Image 1 (cartoon, helix red, strand yellow):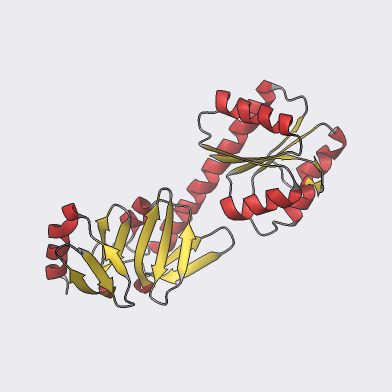
Image 2 (tube, helix red, strand yellow; image 1 turned 90 degrees about the horizontal axis):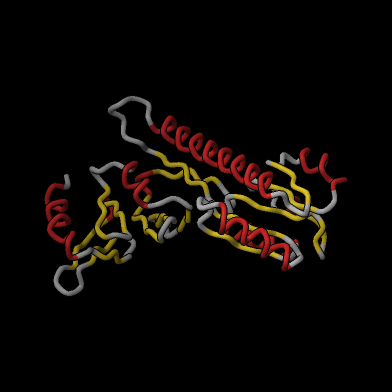
Length: 249
């Protein structure tokens, strides 16, 4: 999980940060924000899995953060020293509501509850994608749903020129030069996209050979797509690429 801690008190952020590091091994990334403005920017740029949100902030409150990120699917645990906000927090579908000073057992219980919800949401999304694309066992998928921080894109498989990996993120390069960044690994799409057309030419690249017009061998060792983009070919993939090109029909 990637967790964003939002609190205008540095010491409070440090306390929560330390609790996460000590007791929550499933948390792989922790970000911090000290204001409504900084929190909104972090949510748009980073798309955290979970937000630990203080209610009273220097430039507003936690509910302002939610108002300014309407349309995003947010998982929130409110953490505050004031219990009068509890009912309002629950009305905006917060996962939990914790009072300062934070009780460790209650904190860990809330994190576990959030983890279960996030896992279930991811599972539902993957099942939905699977059901969307599988009409009959022999039918190839024709469209793909790509969920970004701000939108849900529905694209035609044939419009993908190639996919580029950056750790747990994948950028779809389309034939009209559009780029769509999603927070899923390239391996997931390698398993999903039709192997008749798509091949992993490099650790970071998955190419639709329907849009390949040239293979530059030798020292260059890259493919050229019909929109003149260059896609590298790993040395160990060279023979596979040549065989793949020969088998295209």
